[in-house]
Structure formats: structure tokens, C-alpha cells
Length: 115
Ligand SMILES: [Zn+2]
Image (cartoon, rainbow, N blue to C red; front, side, top):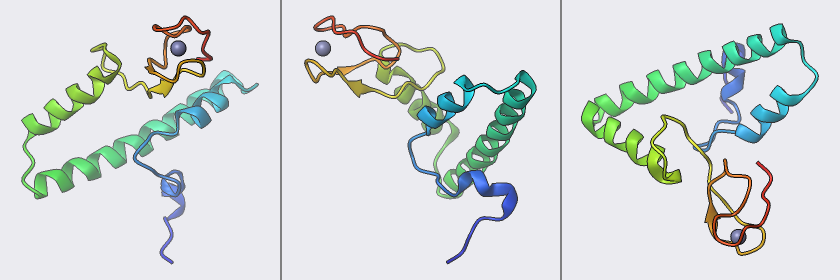
């Protein structure tokens, strides 16, 4: 099996969905601010590298910059708000409807939802 070189170890568990839960667990633990900054810098470098690779591959496949920008906007708007952020949707534990992951309560039934 081909493994990632050490500087790309963050990619070994790469999936199409960002692992935001692990990220926020890390950020909420008792780390110093310098440690958090280092983690963020490492994440930023990994994400930048992944995006660069994806953009180059998409360009090689004939996907235009406009198509990429349209897709970014489509994904951004999935939570109903164009804010340049990705919010993973989830289902309400009470009514099971798809809800915005950033709201503290379900829009449909009012159930309190963990953010
Ligand atoms: Zn609900």
C-alpha cells in the first residue's frame, strides 16, 4: 500500500467531507494559543495543498474557473446563507428534518440542537 509522506500525514484520513468535529474537538481542548495557532497553520497548509491539487486536476480535465466558482457558491448556499463558509447539515434529533448546523434550535420544531 502506498502511504503519504510524513508532511502529508494529515491527508491519510482525507474524505470528501471535512472532519470538522475532530477539528473543533481539538480547538476546544486545553491547548495553549500557540499550539492552536500551530494546528491551524498545519490545517491551512494541508487544505491549501489539497485545493491546489484539486484545482490543477479540474483544470486539466477542462473544468473552467467559472464552473468551480459556481460550485463553490452552490455549496456555500446549501445552508441558506451565502457567507463563504461550509456548514455541514444534520438532521434534527426530534423531527429528523435537515437543519442548519449553526443554529441552536431546529427551525421546524424548536428542538434544542447541539452546535
Ligand atoms: Zn426539529
